[in-house]
Image 1 (cartoon, helix red, strand yellow):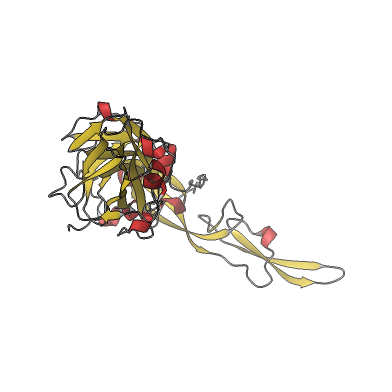
Image 2: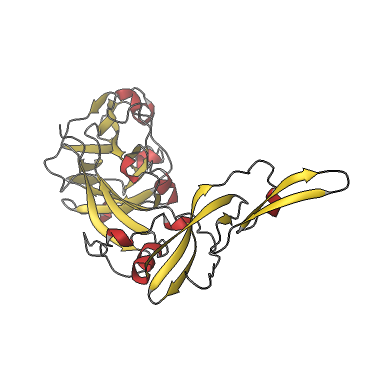
Length: 348
């Protein structure tokens, strides 16, 4: 069996921008001596003069000093209680001239301020506002994907509800889902399980999911449809007959069998519930079911075929494999603190 197959499209879609960025395009390299001394979120302020930017940035958090009166601390000074008697109180203030040395953030935490310079161009490139990028990534199912079903039962209820099921096939290159009475009566009900390792998404926000399937054959005896639902097999990498009932009944997307063309990719765009089924830190598990199965509708015509075949991960290559294309974007960066303009006079 093939190993799990995954490829990353080099498709970057800048939000709010029409078009697609050229794959592999990198930003202009900034010389080492012009790199910021800190992350941009730590920058307190900046001032520009003749194309050069002097910026202040947070370094170490400042703890309260012995006998210091914190309420009297300013950006240039610390005040200490020297003596306190009934008739008098003596304070001593330590003043630092020139550029401010202390900075209090929006959480009332004090930081030591330091200073550095760079060019205006380098500063702008490194402090540009965070723009989320959306990535469209193809994920292919683990090789443990397969079909579980009940065959040749005397009633639809037995075919639809008996668990463990009659059989499981995890090494087929092309499997079938069925909801039919092929005559006798002989009822069949089967479901395909696809398990995708989507841990590469991480903490990104998922905004869209498209499910791709290539069918090799179909039989539409009842005017049926193909549905994508959730699945919860006991293992993310293998199936047993006991997983037959570990499927959802809420359809994430559906397509009529009559609208499906075999031997080409057909696509199902998942609804918000389907998007929510993506696990960015583990496996995202789905199942493919026919509408008669999802709705538990007894096949109405004995001897009429009703099935949908699809290529599996064991098929050679990936050109026909099931896949999910997940659009995801990095979560927005933390809000940057308002910059306070620190003006210094004379030499800067």
